[in-house]
Length: 216
View (cartoon, helix red, strand yellow):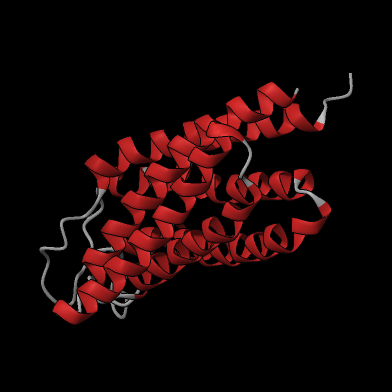
């Protein structure tokens, strides 16, 4: 049985929405409070690492969904989808490396009591590498949304997807600029951009699923 390109797009959209919803639910209960003091020595809490599993799988799924959208784009607009795919790949490299470090460096080091020099890598550090790379990764995802937007301009459904993508980028950049002017706080920006991007992934995943289903 050969699966059509619209069916692939439908299932990728559905998987994206589902994985994001799961990640969202787990992260609500597993996000560190960042109330720890230097050296931010982590205490092993299972929920702090479980949410990374669906979030990790979500990132390459988003890349695959972007590639599927690129495949469906009109030839004269493929430049936009190609740029979007490039940003999606950058996002994937940053976030997958960031999450993988938590499992292969932070978690085993914590369980072994080898916490010397670990403060820069742990997600408990509000000024650490994890928060910085995560914020940058999801900012790249917002950029991918922006370049996907021009592909959707026919009918109310596509217009909804278009403006959802544009609004997400405006909110991401606006929050970065606003928080920078109000006083540097990368943690607040990280929280905001994750909420924005994940909300967009859930809603657009549903809308794209409907779009691919209609095309099929």
